Image 1 (spheres, rainbow, N blue to C red):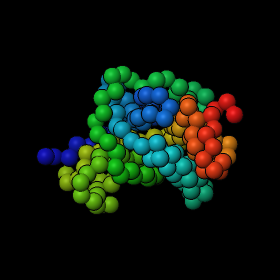
Image 2 (image 1 turned 180 degrees about the horizontal axis):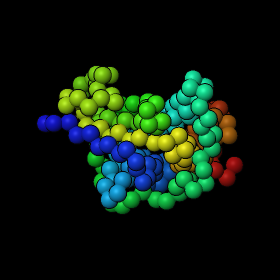
Image 3 (image 1 turned 45 degrees about the vertical axis):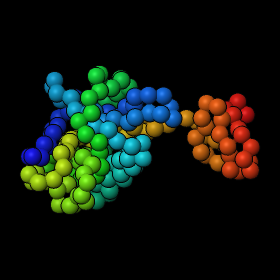
Length: 188
């Protein structure tokens, strides 16, 4: 079957959001352009890595090309709205790619579907017909900063960490290894 690559050159929205309660959330990235919306599922850790890498990429571009990029997203680009519903997962993300398109001065984010076999690195950010389905999004530096800021807020909106071991606290508490098995609750 032919590979499907969903390309968003000027997305109206590119956001991360969740479905479910803290401790049992499913993370989604959604790209919307005109009337087309594509949602892909990924892990919280993948969102965290993507956020860190976007910030690092923008710092590297600024340093290497001596380009002035926004360090904070402009107020009007901060998107706090919910995911578009219904959330219909196109695929689950396995491999992620990130790059800088110097010609258009855009951050390029590519999300590839999970596959049984190992993904050849040459298919990332490539239009070859062989390989997993993908979503490719082009973002201005300001939009990339806005995405990263929102993603960080979504990550932090989960369960509170234990003040001793930093593991997430469940509503009924957790067995803290630093307390030799003593059960801590959120109220403590």
